[in-house]
Amino acid sequence: MVHRELTARDLDGAALLDLIRDEDPLGVVSIYVDMPADGADRRAEIEVKNQMADLEREVARYGPPHRQEALRSAIRRAMPAVERLLDPRTTGRGGAVFSSLSAAAVTSLATPLPLASRVVLDSRPFIQPLLELLDEGSPAGVVLTSSRAAELFDWRLGNLGRLIRVTREFADDAGERPGPLVASAAGAPFVTRAREQQSRRERDRQMRWIEQVAAEVVRLTDEREWERILVSGDERLTVPLVEALPDRLRGVVLLDPRHLHESDHSSLAEDVAERLMEDRAGRNADLSRRVRAAALGAQRGALGLSEVVAALNEGRVEHVIYDSARRYTGGIGPDGSLFAEGERLGLGKEEPRLLERIVERALHTGARVTPLDGSAAGRLADADGIAALLRW
Image 1 (tube, helix red, strand yellow):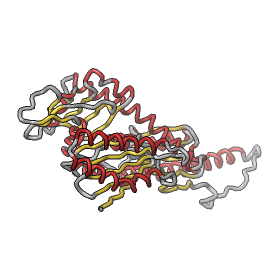
Image 2: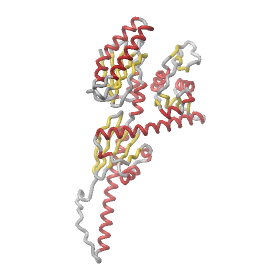
Image 3: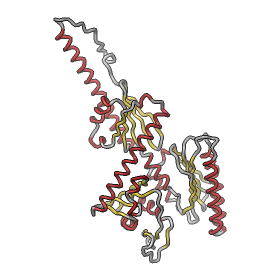
Image 4: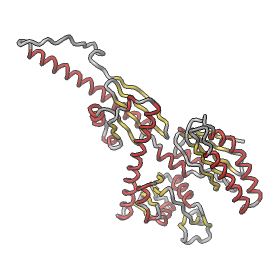
């Protein structure tokens, strides 16, 4: 048996595209696990095993005998990886295992972010939860400023890793330790000038430090493809730092007035994740408004299932957004074209998992895919919960 083990760092659009290329005529069973934070809590284990038993019963009721046996074998191959994910000693909160019915191949993945327990049998790995995970855990930079230094971190998929520390230079560090300034009536102008010069030198040192930090932020943003940058600390430091960044980065900065540099690593990771999740909700609400406005304004937009699949068939889609709580049925034509339910199929076949095919087509054509929830998804309620920005 071939077992491929992925980490959260392996998870990106290319990895998802690689996963969905593994089509199996008998099917691929996808097992998602909500990993227990408490070893005494067995609800996740019970839930996922009940779902596997339900799937086996459903296939036994409606499927041919050889598919029943293939499913049982696929689940047996997957169980060692599932058991490892359910072990509370495993690092992470979510996990997934994909097991092919025809081939002795298993792929597993553990992530620091939670994934709801779910078991799905389809012709390809079921990747919807991983799309949501990628959107929630999109890469971000974290800059913690203090009076002494700035620390830069990389955050993605719940992992927070320290990168560099940029220390601030002070007068003592530069060998400029000032002597006492003794005031007198005759020496008052001299004392005033000396203090002004000392303050000016300190401001210059601070500006050089801020520019050095900004240069590191720019370099790491380009190198690590950060989509957001969380900057924390006193506004007397954070505001000049943001002003020192190029225009293309200022728009993705999130200012946080808290002194997060005082937090331990575990608390810091939780605070960062919470703040980025709040920002994600706002960004997705803006995205749904923008896509809807583009479609209604006869610009480069598609609104509703029929328009979106038609644009996908022509390779015109740049970015698909959809309500993650919805599922669609439809059909696939002889040439592979997708159709919404009720549209003419010709010699095609029905497709009960049309959303999965939409996602696959989008990834294959280089389009971005974003699942929505909450108020962002609500803006698409009258449009089948799906829309797209178009290339032309």
